[in-house]
Image 1 (spheres, rainbow, N blue to C red):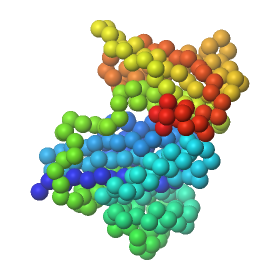
Image 2 (image 1 turned 120 degrees about the vertical axis):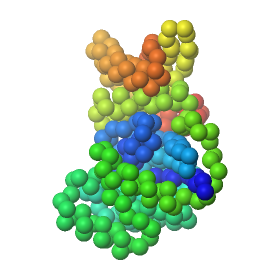
Image 3 (image 1 turned 180 degrees about the vertical axis):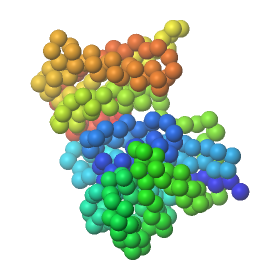
Length: 289
């Protein structure tokens, strides 16, 4: 009996969805940062064994849209709601329980669901037990599982729970498939992750990355990418004094891209100003949203 299904991850921004998917898949597919709203796309990771295939989807954190970009992000959440066989509802153990349960109830899920309490290492044992009891009393999820995605605690048990809930099915993808996204997509995401880590507050949220060249040569891969910002002042910050900041972004991104593609990389970065790109459908399409 072979099982296969779509297992989609939902939750508030910064609940640990991307860290969890990376832990379940065993590869870093979704970029991670301490800042909220890091994930903008629906990112797929495929786990295949002789007994089952799980197609995981990391989705953007659920927010009230303020820009067309946000509307596109919530569109990714909506599509994930429609095709989920199993929904993982993830919450931060330290976050407000009522808010999270209200959010999950509002999703009006048709799929079977698991309520995942993440960052469990931040609570004392008695606090955690009381939280689990309240989640079980909520009664809308079939299972409540406690994990620490960052530490890998509880992840094998969560995987077992997921497999037990999968429908019988043939695989959807060939067994060597890891994701449905292109290498160019992940290159752009790696560059964007460095911007989230290196810059404060507004800069990462005003930024997009467009990979304009990905050329495989004999000895290396040549990559060019545009970093898009909304104002000239932001361009100056990204460039830094005498180009110091963009050089740092490039160095850190190149190291991670080389690990990802398993080859030497020549990376060239440019900064372009596109006012209000987050509300412009033409720009959003051009930048992959």
